[in-house]
Image 1 (cartoon, helix red, strand yellow):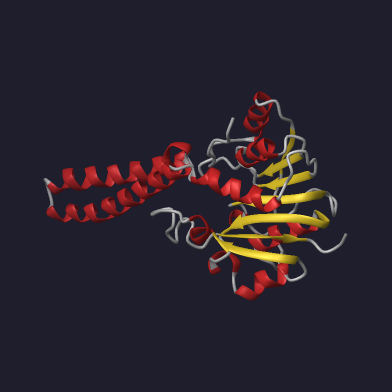
Image 2 (cartoon, helix red, strand yellow):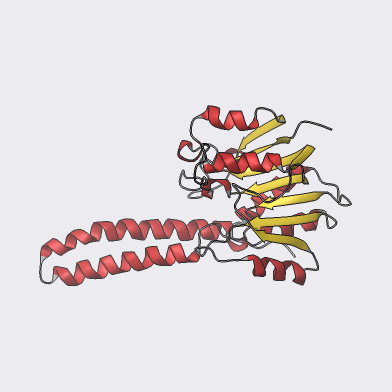
Length: 261
């Protein structure tokens, strides 16, 4: 059974945008019966409506029925791990969402020892219990935990493989931290990776608003071996609007190995 999309745009966000667009539109039209000045609300109504349409389109493109682009990204991540079907490494998925990536990983290598962590905020459409139930139905087992990616509750060198897809840019720095949340999350991912272990991470690495100056990210990964950096728009040839800057435009996949035997 193939992985289903976790749809990185929550339904709640789309419902809010649709409701706001409708509310502004109705207020403008009805208010315009008394005062033509109320018609100025049509401009923001159309803008919010367009944003809602784009979000709906992106969500559809990520889903299996709309091209399955989330599944394609997951398969690309797994291909970079170069896992043999009989392999049984320990793997950590940071920001596992609804466990779609782990489901795909089990399809490739059923014997992996999987762990998934996420903060599972109230704005999202899934939670830990749903992940556990989903894998149980498919005959797989994984350990799940609610955890802040900026402060992973694992000892150093705990996992053979670390993966993450579209999580780090959501991470906020703890109070007093000097490093940006996304960079801190990446540092934590490398900390819990065993020497010689492989990481494959997908995020908005090309967005300075999340990662700051290029040198900041370079400092985090400078000690890794065989670093490979790929822009998803170019590697996968994603369509509009998924390829726009608000979506996958600045998204890259970084893969490599932690130094050591």
